[in-house]
Image (cartoon, rainbow, N blue to C red; front, side):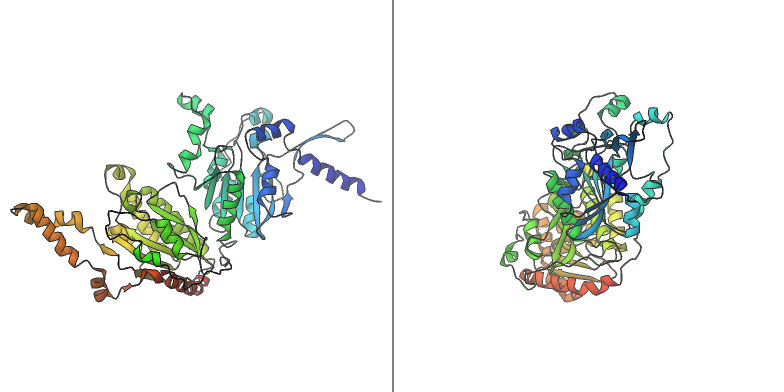
Length: 518
């Protein structure tokens, strides 16, 4: 006896799930300029590279003859996917089904939820978030309320962060637990004009605080990619968000027990760049392009910037040298002279943690005037932030290369140097360093001598000239052995370092992460 009838039933139910929340919900999604959940997955993954699980789960209604009358799928679509030929686990919210609320990963009996599959399979985990979180409608359906579940699902999400790459994309109005999951990731991205992020939306704000506000003003990308720093990158479209996720994952291994993949490279390791010889102005009141510096040294076109709109005194991201993936950070003199403030320090710490966890060498381009000073910096807690950055630097393990292109001053300057492990530092002739700047420092150290002089301004100039004469990097090289290189040779030295780093990184596979935050 054949099971053909039941097999036809499987196909029928698969067709029903493709209808998602129904024509009205699909049309509403498209009017908002958003793709449906299944269109997103099709656009994101390799052709034919998605294998759905929990595919028949949902709310079914049967007639008197026990025949299926209607079917409403869950508010999420989950499965294994191929991204550039590599397997990942994807979970995507379906806003057409009750605003993506309820029907999450849990409650599947013996079937593993998506996050647990990522943990057990040791695969990257990608969330495409378009969900409003919990809904009070569920209280009426249950006939009761319920206590929060004690973070059972979130415990898995937290553990994932120390095992596999985790990425979240905010693709609509995301609230409640999904809003927290948006930030429980190594990289996240929002879509311009169609995404917002908050624990509770405008109606909740109105009830709690008594004022009206739009979703965009409350939690739009201008808040989270510029001010709060809760979201790393802004995408111009959903397709751009998918491309950014693919690029981010391309630099990382599938889990902490593997090495990052090496990409093909036709950019010669010995390439020299003449423009580096004159990139740093002799007049330090003038600025230069940090991006031009980074792009001149890295493999052509390989730099992927993270959080470009937040903490702009530092530029951070991922790139490649001789095909090997590296973490990159650099001071940006176009913003606050490159001085590290709280936001920039937070950005750097996240990069250090990412590279330490997934075995990427760090390449630091140092032009550090110090931690940001002033009243606003004090209000933001610059001392605690500075202490945290020192801790993150000292406790990191990955190979670390520093190229000193300009200034390296104070405690912030020492955060471009790690005292243990595989560390290498080269300096350009344009470098200068010390415990503090001569300008300003001289006024404090020689205050009495200056004030008692017949011409205090002339005395200050005389003292600063004397100090500047001994500030030559070549004097430091004579005393300490610090290597000073031709800036045009930077790429050659960097590529050699990163090649040597691979044997050290092999010894660090699978090591437990070290806590950094104070």
